[in-house]
Amino acid sequence: MSLRFLPLLLLAAFGLAIAGELNYPLDAPAPDGRRPGGTLSQTLPAPVLGNEENKDLRRERNYPEQPPTIPHSIRGYQVDANGNKCLTCHSRAGSARSQAPMISITHYMDRDGQPLAAVSPRRYFCTQCHVTQQEVKPLVDNSFRNIDHLLEDEAAGTAKP
Image 1 (cartoon, rainbow, N blue to C red):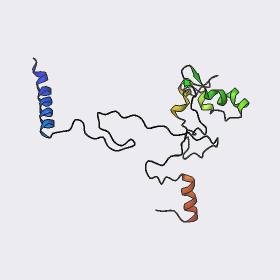
Image 2 (image 1 turned 45 degrees about the vertical axis):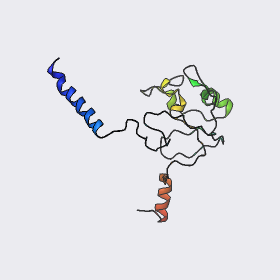
Image 3 (image 1 turned 180 degrees about the vertical axis):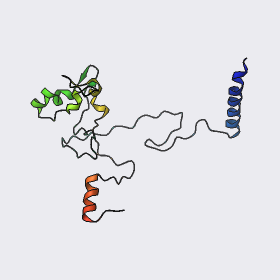
Image 4 (image 1 turned 120 degrees about the vertical axis):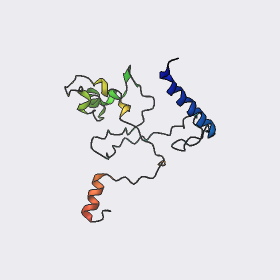
């Protein structure tokens, strides 16, 4: 055996000795986060999905370039390499028939900004950026205010330092 591996072997032995000495639990409880309970090595089932909102109302965006959320249910929509149900209504031709908003012209450009005849392959999978919404209790308290509300408060003299 070469002496090159001796420091690595000693380090591994030292790590095992320390872990054994501290009685480090190999099945320690997982941190209580979005899915509380369980241990690090335990796999728990995913929580049941709630019902998607189906209001068909456009939401205000919180920051520039934020992808719009999907204001309707997409349960059962096929969005994969074989087909994209979203384009039935939101493509150039589909939006004229359905009166749904057409997808942004940026979705018809390649990475160099050159226009394409069809949706760019890198923009084809809509749910990578666009998500449906659910009426749920927030996981954490949130006091986010968009820039418009902050500017209104400042103009009214009620802005917090």
